[in-house]
Image (cartoon, rainbow, N blue to C red; front, side, top):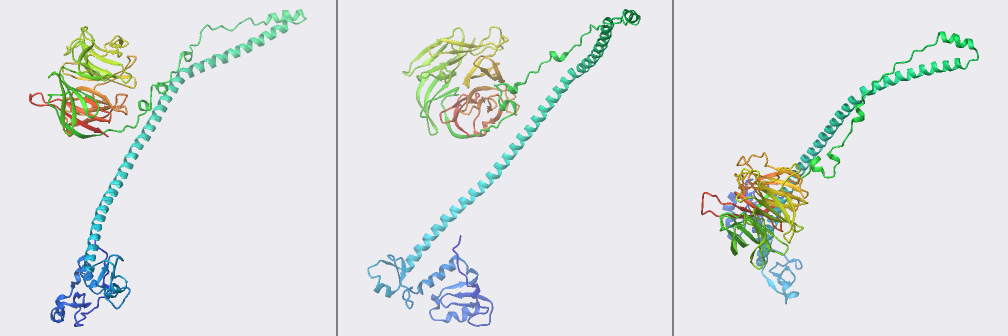
Length: 568
């Protein structure tokens, strides 16, 4: 950005002002205020007294900032006073903030402070250049912001229109489908009724005609019987019609009376727009916030506490650690020796621990391990405390679980109160079929129970969802998105504040994001974030997703990592 400069193009003569012959003008002398050709600047101007102190400008540079600075230097030396027009300014009064001449200094500026004109000029140029640089930076920022906002507006409008078109298309398809179903039902209804209706109408018409004939014959017979002439009785006897219409015992089979219309699920309370028509979902993205190196081979479970502290557990190493996350480091505050599969915090801040043994342990706030409840001979493999302080415990007949499941196998979820009293058991469906094989993770959300269930020795599994009454609502067996593995290996399950369900898929290095109906919103491959073999999922009070990872089993020295990820 250059300063705006006046140009002398309109005042430039056609010929050199020295020789008045050459039109090849090359230079201007600011002191002499004349335009010259190359020859005259050498032969004539150079001979002028003190010409070596004159300021010359090449006309090709005339509009540049440097040329303006050169002109300014000459201007300063010849600047006339605004009060004393016959005087040249010789100083700058800082009190009045203006150039002054010698007369000004004597008359009205005697006690003022002064600076040289060149000094004030240089300061002004420096300030203007600094402002110019700031303006250029500011202009660049708002120019970039304008481009970004224009692109965002364009992309947003395009996406809006795309989704709108899909909604309208879906609406059209729904209307067409509903109309098609209604048309089919009406046609089916008509096929049931119309033939019967026609038959009934035919029979009714015949019955009406027969009735009319019988009424007429009966009326004639009454008249004859009421006659006072006995001869009329004898004459009528000869032409008396004694025939009667045949009575049909056949009954019309009216199927329409045995037909009933039952409206579909669209009118049932549990159905919503998302299950009937579809809904809008904010497809989440993941942004890596921090990476922490653990000294454990793997972190099978994370229990977030306050102030960036947490309990982390490694079952195979029989370690339970209380840690604090500091920048990119993990500070171990407590190191306890116990095998832990899952953890859950009670309302008194005691921590329940499922250990793969019969006893559900509790680590109390006074740092003591105690037995909360024994499920012998069954083994506790998962634990969860709901918002209403109900305790859900996953149980199996053995741990590690024996596959395949047999009649003696047990996959059960029990509900306890805070006093460890048994409240409810989830094990069989209404048809007395087993609901679960190995309930390794449990969460609750909106009166539903979400369970990660391992189904075989390869740790293939599924997500099973029950309502509080034990009714199976849906199961999720993975999606058809191409993954690293052909199998679905769910390890943990969590839920966001908005009700999205997150499932970690270990060997496919993915996080499956589901809606409340078990439909896939998105399946995120987290290898791009450097996250491999995701195990535990935990969302803290700030909405940060904590993902713990397994180390590669081939390297015994390898240690697991913990990642803090922002969902947005």
